[in-house]
Amino acid sequence: MKTIMIMEDDPAVRENMQFLLEELGYEVVTAVDGREGLRVAEEIVPDMILCDIMMPQVDGYQVLEKVRANSELSGVPFVFLTAKSELTDMRRGMQLGADDFIMKPYKAEEVLMAVQSLLKKKGNAAASTPPPVHHSTIIPAPAPAREARPVEHREHELILSGATPDIFKIADIKYINAEEEYSVVHTRDGKRHVVRRLLKEWEEQLPTASFLRIHRSFLINLNFVSKIEKWFNNSYRVFLKDVEVPLVMSRRYTALLKSKMKDRNESLDR
Image 1 (tube, rainbow, N blue to C red):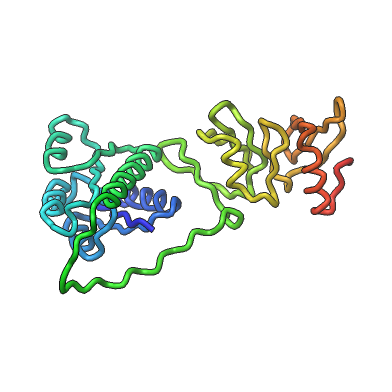
Image 2 (cartoon, helix red, strand yellow):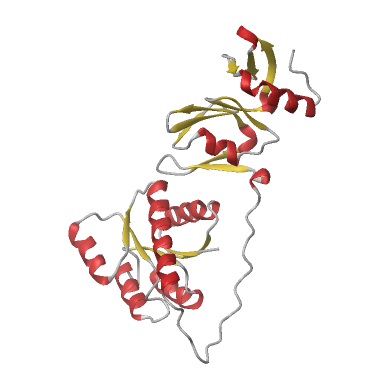
């Protein structure tokens, strides 16, 4: 599991970014200022550092200078978090060795793209470079990594479609419909969540015991099915609780739905 260090004095920004990264499977360590951040970074040697520029005592530029001067930390990808967009600030950061910038207020997609891109680049570089040999160095035992739960047992879904992440329970998804490269997730509370994800990806990620593809454009949660009736040319219509318009099921999915309903001791013809 990759460890990401966040140095940020704004608690709202720090906690929001920590939540986002932890939900995506990263180990996150935080610090409220540059002085504490440097001390912790030297102890744990994270895989990446996300650092605010404007901080009390030790600002982001000073942190970066010390990181690049430290033999253990010099190769760690370093990303500035800043609300300042002046060209001079960005130039100074790049001259000091920053790998990227994320402007506040940030979008979740921007954070993820920066993190994934730099970690991948670091991984490729490490694969092509023999690891250094350290003599007479005591390395503390790493903390046990959290095991990622199987998809079937995951309880929540994180949608990255705005300035802040949106999380909801998988059990609250009524159905998902495809709209080209996007999908629209309809949840129990009546909300529609638009996300750039193909329906096929949802089908692979959601628990098969509850979710079923019934059409090239629809994926439904069987727990919300209220009625199924025969329709035109031996096809069926599926009615979901609190959804006014029924969804049409393609004939190619009928046998699979019958099998699912049989397993749930329910009848298809009702």
